[in-house]
Image 1 (tube, rainbow, N blue to C red):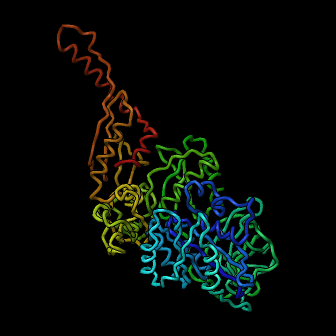
Image 2 (image 1 turned 180 degrees about the vertical axis):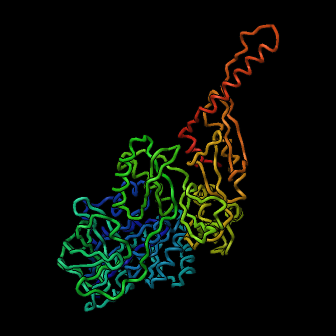
Image 3 (image 1 turned 90 degrees about the vertical axis):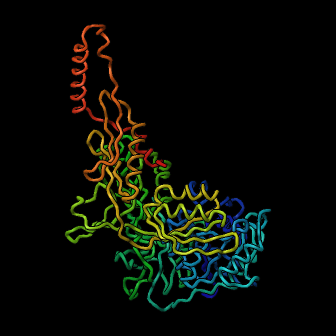
Length: 595
């Protein structure tokens, strides 16, 4: 066990984490030249295109240092906010972490939030400055930032370049020398922490785990502690580039287990594996059910593709257990599903994967968050959809989820970022100048406000310099109202939204104006109204297409013209009573782009 090292890599998006991992694999000869490609640990095409890690990966390397052979387990982590629970489980499986900072950009928001996660789990931190071969690299400035942040010595900070491979041998030596070997009891009952799972269409679900105490052998009867399900370990082994079966995975090592599991919901990240005969008394702490934060309706473009969409979502759920969906129907869009996502990036990825992997063209409604509604009957309801709200007379108060947002930016953009966050109902918690050039701002703000277009606006006002990170801090009471859109007095449920009372009037007016442009003219007047309960707060009218019925009257008495116009007016009125208004698809998409 003393020759095992488990470590992960933490960094902000785009700081060169996957590229540096490639160099480590090359240097330890884990891959031969023929198998090597860029970002080899990112298995999805989508990951390579966007340059982000979506699924965490694990790989084992053999390394010889001063005549001794070491086993290095790299547990790669996704860098994005939405997957912070997966990151925390991967970090809990390690004893050390490489903190990678881009020498051209300096410390950014996710560097700090993932670093705090690692420090809370008592990991040994090895700081690495990456991209030092670039002309824009500010090695001394960024090194000082890192020393201030962690309080290490100057010689502890390693300099490297993932592109050229410079500094990689020093990193491997530091991993062996600085990171402690795993501490576990080989004689104790088996405790293994699941940090990831993948779906294989032939073998079922493959769970990746780290053995904390005891050991696991092929053929053992095992139990998953939190779900209580029992299985037989048909195959256990190590994670190299391919799965390498073995008879036993001992204490401190990282491996995989195949036991023919067919449903992803049975394997939960953070769960503990133990033996059926000799179980452990407690699970490894830190396990929690992953809760979706953002909800959106997903509807097929063609209504007869509903069953295909259901099949596609079920297959996606095998790969991604954090996706949840329930059937729902809408008068305007027909049958579809209400899906729960971890965050906006997760929503975007699922949409993209539905299109690429299953060829499904979908309409996604306005994303919203889940609210807690306290009724006058002292019940608490979880509401994910504005149409699920009880009647206004039954509502005592509504609570909405709040986040602690952390923005790091150049100090030149301090004012505009502050204004943006305050406009989004944020309250400033703290501000801290990291250097004279860089400022860190912490805000408490409602999650609903960042779901819309917050990130795009932040990037544009800061010219791309601001980095943003958030975590949910709980629910707080809010003055929210349900805003309905009525067409000819009939409610369009897909356009309803829950919104803060102060913003309702502006939002309602903009919606009516936008819909007036998009809804085609009919033979009768169409009234577009925004309403809160029974109170109309904004109105626009799409005028009727009219025929000139008085054209045949030339000269003569005015009463003849009036008679024809009255007759037309009656016809229009009758038409309006029987006519219905079709809302075009573009109207639903336009609501997302209201500015």
